[in-house]
Length: 112
Image (cartoon, rainbow, N blue to C red; front, side, top):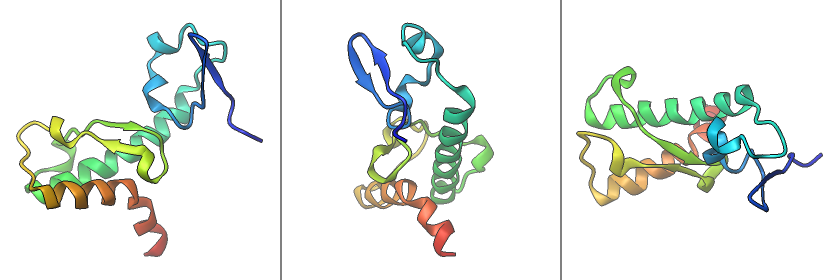
């Protein structure tokens, strides 16, 4: 069965592909109710992974790190907004490596 489709201003969106629609204020005009627990779990996993990986590179406590992650929950659809992490400094190489690791971090767990 395919993911349910949200209708928002005449456009179709798959809710598992677009976490940006997770805001209740954005989803209120949708014809399908937003399921907070489903999205919250997926988003929390991606954010926790990003916070951990960024904290490791910066020498920070992951519990005090706040990385915004948007997009979906599969590979290149996961978009960590590294430029928005306050106080962090990355080289271009680190940005590429961290972005890839955050996007495919679930593979590390499966392969471990």
